[in-house]
Image (cartoon, rainbow, N blue to C red; front, side, top):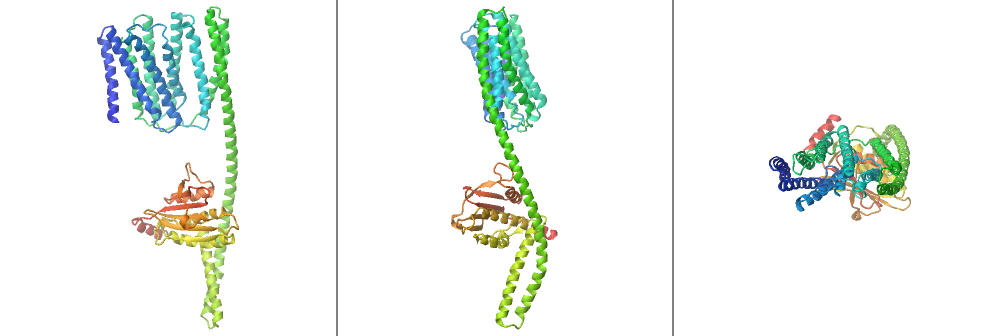
Length: 583
């Protein structure tokens, strides 16, 4: 790729130097004309070939950036087509280009797509406005500009041929068009930053050189001193080579950066398009009242004005339909945002209630520990006393229930205690056994049985036990909430591991051997976000541990997979040391 680009750049320099040598050394004649025309055609062909790949191979994935390069390619292609028509007369037919020249309209139109490319504003980030509405605004301006050309120039070229009037009107329209292009590039250079500013600067320099040199060439044509290959063509050739080099120069610029969109630009474009539509009747009225015009020219201009008014009216009608649809879209979106805000407010209130409940449970658990410890001590004393065997058995049963109650209280304390995250080597099997023990009675009350399949041995993961316990309880509760009560369903939990990760699967009503496949990875920020705030919090916790949360391919199956990376042997000692320091 680098060798090919270097070859193209050397070709541009060689063609430019050849034009310079030919203009300075060759005398006026067919040889100089052929060499000059072929060099300019080759430079425009290289320019079109260098702009075209950027239409789909730009540095940005944004559609409006690719549209910028596509419109620039279209403008260069029109320019190349005009040069081919010029070469047809001077190189192939060996005769002067006729004046007026039908190819002048192609030359005039080649700047229109380039101005449109600037109106796309590729250096700004895409907003949420319907792109079709902005394109309709541009099409209105484009139609009006073509109408002005047809109104001013075409009558003196086809209806009533008048070479001096044609040339004067054409040069005026083309000059205004070039000034519009230069003004747009100058504004973009002043408002853009970084790589885009440098790109616009090169386009401005090349366009300014072309505009000034073509103006001088037109002056020379008017004074009968211009001929193909003359010194007037040297700056023109340099401008062609400069424009052809712009895409390769852009490869060295950082075009990925973008600024925030500016809605005021869309407002001004809309106002200009409406002004263009309202100006048509006044232009037609001026033509009707101008008694100096030939009747055929007047009839042609009025007909063109009426046809353009109808065309632009239809475009405005469709634009208003799209605008109404856009307003409806934003209204519906704002309504959804309001509903989501209300739901988020409710979730925040519920989270605060749960936090308060957690603090209350923590305090109650501490208070329960004291009588439970006394009950356990007395039951052990009774079991060791000289009571009859039946009574000793009852005392032992009391001790077992007290121990079970203390285990449940310990689980509540572990879950409710607000402690900072401490990453230590952790066995997920122990976390699941501890976490699902207090959850199982509540699930059984709903008619849901719990089945665990724990892989043994299971590699350790580097995680915070409280946070992982919270995630496991929430995922299990999420699946239980999706099971219809009274259906005698089951919650399945299994652990397994690969080479570098440990997976914990939660799913319902599916045996272990028919467990679903998980291929939809959730991300806390991005395209595939969780649907609820609490699930988003779980996803963020798992991501902070270096893992991921996934859903099954079939969204109708209530299931989750939590995947955490296996702790490496080198991090185990440091993690244990950190845990000892923290304690």
